[in-house]
Image (cartoon, rainbow, N blue to C red):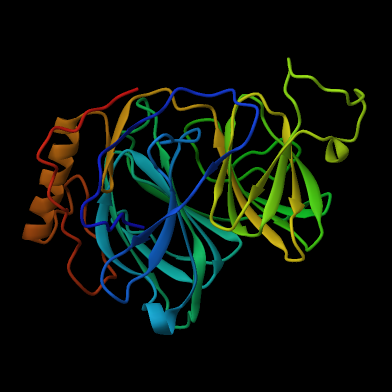
Length: 351
């Protein structure tokens, strides 16, 4: 999905990793994508004070939208650099085309992962049979050693795994205690997973303590509890059942993102009402590199991002260059998406 904001803000990062012992609640902001009938999304990453969670750098949550009212998803060909896009649906169907020649459908239970690398263009359109559209769009920043790889696309089904009362599907990376590792390619240690709980259900989800994590609530509310970490007071016996251990509990409403810092070996999730729960878990080793995010580009400095924009605008005007950085997208009836104007000040990366 493209960042279709008319005036995309410069975002720099990441912040220094935290070892906080309580879950930080990050509220979403509403972002309209396009014209008056276009989709609205709830964005929790990036935001001021929290640019990345591991290498995850962008999280849009949308729907459930009635396509007859919203117009569905209609995103023309647009560029990306230095990142991977991860498309995950709860309802509906989206057709993807990109400049590597890939054409694939996004459906619930399967993941589409597109590695932009040095540059790619793609389009995304909800299919005619889709009446409701509901899902998340996530981006992963590529580390410097990998951000210039040739672009490629992957599609993979996921396997449901039962953990206590939960059903877990890992769609990127791996999750401790779950044998079903995602089959798509990642370039840094990370995890992306869907966790579902029935009404009244609870589960202990094991975490990698070297990761920081985020809990994005799609259906809720949910109560998330992290036990005390080493050095905190803990009266529980060493052999205590993790699902029964008390600790720092946080109430998370729908579309909120709960940030779990380094050092935690698990989180207990409980349905906080009589409704079922669905949570997207993201996490990874803190991303220790400076980066600049602007529009659909991730780079390392102003001049690099400005050059990406110049090359894309040249493609928009000329109709595309099959041998250029971004290539051409077949299968979309319409012009590509022009880039917005750059800010009048230089984009500055910061740690």
